Image (cartoon, rainbow, N blue to C red):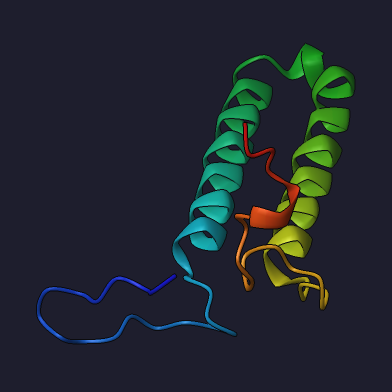
Length: 92
């Protein structure tokens, strides 16, 4: 499979042939959610003990999303080889 070229011929910044958009988007979403939790906590201080675990959940999800983006694919990465296995298809 070929990689689509950008219309203006410029290459996008990548890290091991991966785009940064999914990583940056997950960080921005985590910051927005953390900001909303903080705003809720400041508005209603009685809920401090309730929202503290939410910060941990957002942090864990952010670390998981970052790990998923950074991890290196194995040798058997199905995206690097032909996915249509003609020998496995039944020829009826």
